[in-house]
Each structure stands twice: as C-alpha cells, then as structure tokens.
Image 1 (cartoon, rainbow, N blue to C red):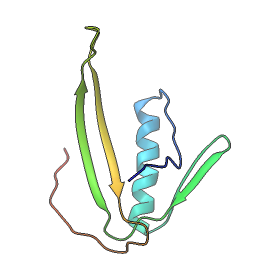
Image 2: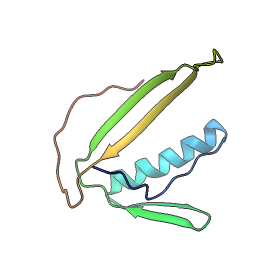
Image 3: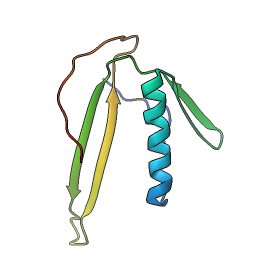
Length: 94
C-alpha cells in the first residue's frame, strides 16, 4: 500500500523543547482530544481511536562510508482509518 505523508517536520531542538511537545501529545491522548500538528503553512489534525497500536523502535544506522552511526528512538501511533478500538499489550519505559 502506498504511503502518503500528511505532515513532516524535522529540526534540532533542546531536549526540554522536545519533552514539551511530547507532553502536549500525551495530554491530548489522555483527554481523548485530537492531535494538531502545525509548522509554517503545513498542518494536520489527527484523531487517534481509544486504543491505537503503539510502536517504539530504537535503531542504530551505520554509514556505508565508515562515518559515525546514527542512533534514533521512534514513537509511533498506528490505526486504521475509521478505527475506534484496538488490541492492548504490555510495555515498560524507564
């Protein structure tokens, strides 16, 4: 299935700024509110169902040229368009 990017933002920022954005997303999820993303002229509003699929991925990407590896942690919410519930699972983050 082809992927359509609805919104994309990438930029370097302080960890405290990132935490603030993540806290806003977490607060909206907890309240059941939509998540509104905006940067410049781009914007999108997403309404996750009550039980979306939550994926966390930690990666190390090595450079083919022998440069330093790039590390990343990705947090992703997934759901089918129109979905209202999903399966649960266990997770611990420290």
